[in-house]
Image 1: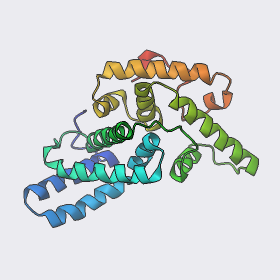
Image 2 (image 1 turned 180 degrees about the vertical axis):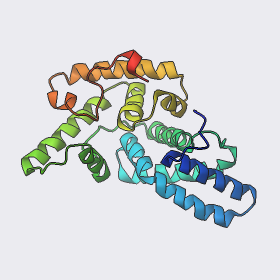
Image 3 (image 1 turned 45 degrees about the vertical axis):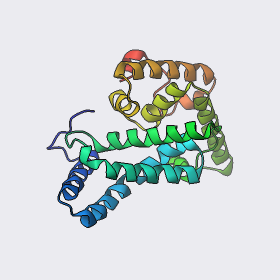
Length: 224
């Protein structure tokens, strides 16, 4: 994990300061206040955590349980968290491991389908703010389903790095920390995943025209 700049004021660093405060409260045996403060941290991370869990589990009930379990586990292990590192990266590793454990336990690999409402909203916000016709909305939904189905056909590790890097915007170093693999390994998996996606979606010009998706012309050197 990358060390946090103590003078930075980004949302990520605010989360880290909040986590450090909660850790101090736990060490001081002020558990009631620690739990109250932790609820604020949950509020800040809930949406992204739910989205990541849904990418993996594809069932709302499973997603909600996985997110709840991850937040509980993170709270219980917060005393071991090192304040100089990013809390959201540390937490996401707990969440992803929990999702993978659930998939292994149930021995199921469900097919990807149209994202839930929060996924649709995130995708819509990345598009130009123009008025959509019903036909346009239907076409957009079909394109989302096609993209996600193509990602789901990738080998498991390639799919993991695509979700965390391309869809969630984490750096390859952060993805490496989340998945407990080398940074160079992440870049190799990402390069292969993007090459496969470009091949399978080469006729889909709409995808390559989207400014928020950068896999149209990506080399292994650019997977950073």
